[in-house]
Image 1 (cartoon, rainbow, N blue to C red):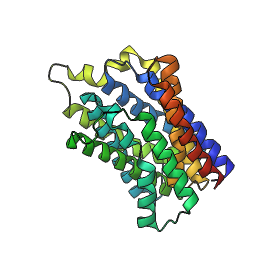
Image 2 (cartoon, rainbow, N blue to C red; image 1 turned 180 degrees about the vertical axis):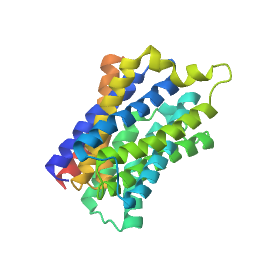
Image 3 (cartoon, rainbow, N blue to C red; image 1 turned 120 degrees about the vertical axis):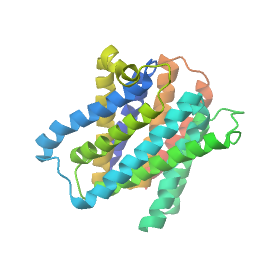
Image 4 (tube, rainbow, N blue to C red; image 1 turned 90 degrees about the horizontal axis):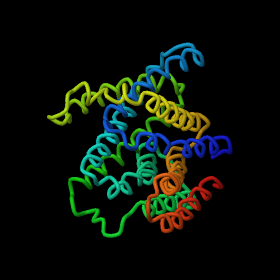
Length: 288
């Protein structure tokens, strides 16, 4: 990975945890994340028109739009159910194991080859990410349906990573995200309608935070949009999908530090130690 692409990914990783820290404590989480998706769509329009003159994308990019949206939906649904069950912290290590899945899929589907050093770096980041977030006695296999959902979310993240990388070979970030997040918004809306608690009014369920905390939604949307754009720019510069996904794992120790400093979360010492393994993997990838 060249220096410019590496800097783009590292900056994106530093920004990535901020969305969820801003969203934390939202009373109507569905409306908050639906608002973020809407904000992305709005932001892509001036970005695409000013930067590229059009929202049009090549015909060859449309399958990537569909696959990226599908991956995001699988990812969001898996995380949403885990959050509702209160077990995201147990299964999140599985979800963040996607770089190895990306590497395997890239090799099988597209003939990508990896040297021993790069595979070792990717493996180190995954092991570090897993150990940082794993809770002793969590019982990852105690509930097969929840494990399957975590695996589904991980697969979704891998699908969207590969789709985004391929799309950036033939189109630009803003118009690509306009169409992708148009699909994501529709599917998110449908999912949130389907899963609405019976006791909650539909308008409150879907849109309450748009009125209660609009500035937080816009801020979270802007920061996450910038984070995603930086990843797509890294792909445009030739960043390989699995390597980019692995380097993005640096967002995990960033979130651990923020959690300790701002939210006073526990287990900081153990997580900080494992952060060095993750950082070592990132260093190996960047040096390859």
